[in-house]
Each structure stands twice: as structure tokens, then as C-alpha cells.
Amino acid sequence: MSDTEEPKSTLDPMSARPLYVQLADVITKKIESGDLAPDRPIPSENHLADEYGVARLTARRAAQELRERGLIVTVRGKGSFVVDQPPTAAPGNETAD
Image (cartoon, rainbow, N blue to C red; front, side, top):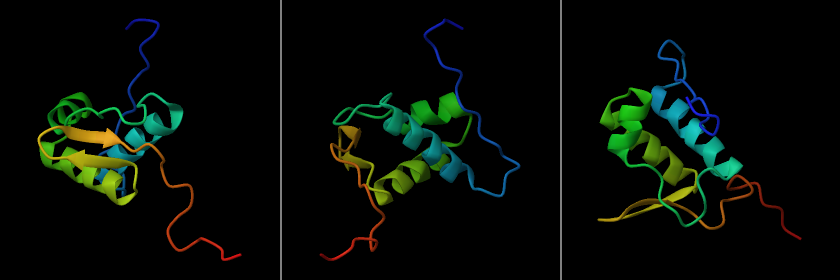
């Protein structure tokens, strides 16, 4: 392993948390840390499946979870991209002034 390469986060198949949620959390941390930049693609479902040793369907469900969190958008034929402005508060938690 090179000095610039971070050890990849491992997923825990024995955890009560579904693998797709664990994978979505890993990608969320990469977005928050800047490893995945705004308006840039995230790795493909096939790449995520290979890298983390999960089924492609698990990687697809993780991408769906990230879309629901408002962290990525998917463009048909191009892939999934990190949004420019991730949400700062959970929906429904806004306060009226």
C-alpha cells in the first residue's frame, strides 16, 4: 500500500445495519472529507461492488440511499455525481423566522 492510499473502510456483514447503509455511510464520509468532490462522479456500481466485496445490487441500493439523502444525483448514461450543495439540515427540521 502506498503512503497516499487510505485503507478502505471495511463493511461488517454481521452487523444489524444493512450492507447498503454501511456502504452509503462510507461514501458519505468520503463526500464530507472532500475525497469525492462536488460535481464529480462517484465510482460506478460495478467498481463499488468490486472494491467493497458486495453484490452489484447492494452497491445500487447504496446509491439510491445517497440520492435519498440528497448527496448525489444520477444522470442517465453518465453516472452519479456529488451534488454541489449537500443538504445541511434534515428535511422538516427547518425553523421559520
